[in-house]
Image (cartoon, rainbow over the protein chains, first blue to last red):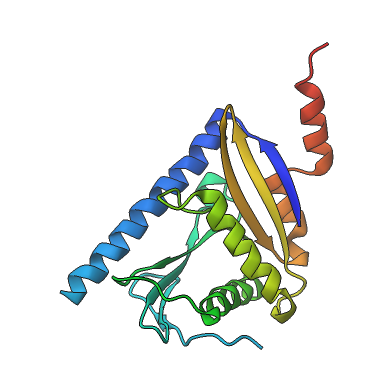
Length: 39
Length: 162
């Protein structure tokens, strides 16, 4: 496996952070829906 | 052969659920994130433990998750990104665990020579580890997203000051 350090621009970094935020929101939504269904 | 759990399609598109022998429930999904990559076929791959209570880990969990990634790569043109969640578990710990699964199960993959790269996306003092999965025929696509060694070298040179 190769590991690269990719220096990205602020804009690129913000895009990835946005994806991570969306991912976190999705995870929270899925977990909440599962809990609501269980109760 | 993989020793995976059977999957149930979720109500969401490109998402599945499975239940382990220990009663833990998992959610697995593929999400199109081409909007962040100039329209290139890039997908976010994620999985999470969704049931309450302590997770009882077993080997079949990794089999199920890695087999689905393998199947996805075999069927689709595109690059899969595993971007770890940034929560109470450090991102590097999640990435290391996924790498261990992938390495251990690599001989079982049926996809045409799946490849993997670990990339550390770095901006100022911030770093995000991302695992990039793709099949041999999509290596060029992966390179266009990650940048070639030559481009990275040129970039490194351009940042030097004399």
